[in-house]
Length: 213
Image 1: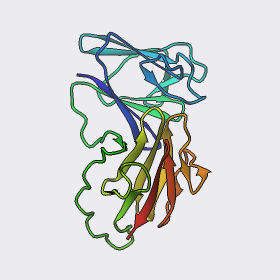
Image 2: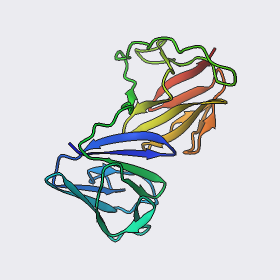
Image 3: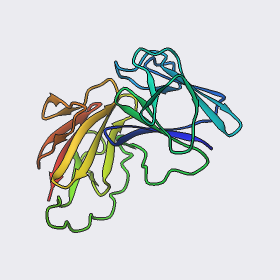
Image 4: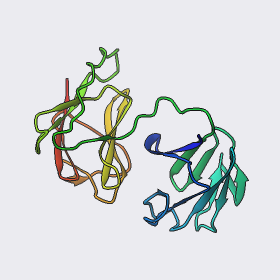
């Protein structure tokens, strides 16, 4: 089944299976794929599926729609095509299954996932192991090890931040949701911010602490 993978600055924020004949993209909340960004028009584009063929059509958007860097009005999508809307990239996958993309880890009181296996030892110049410790709610005291390259935390549609492992350390960025997550009391921007041991994060009322070995 065809699917699209939405990302910004290399961070995946959502995956959507294309199950309907018409799938709409835009900033307004009634769209099938909502991208809450001012660069995206209220009704920006539409994906139309006929059998195994998927066609992308721009709906006279303000900033345009691009496929693999070229502005388009209407075009049949090929496997691995990259749709660009504002700063967002939407990768189209045909019948092939996307591998390596993890869904957002949703932190709910009393429903914390088990801690993953410890991170492997760091090589020279790479960050060591790190974790996110929940400070309040029913899940207070639980830790989630940051063993993946990208770990997304929060509540989809409300507040989602992504923590990315980079050669010089871990960075955090706001990737989705109208409720701005905070770092040490300040709003987290969409541009990645370097995390330091002991930093405090707050997303959708859940307070967490970044802990690095």
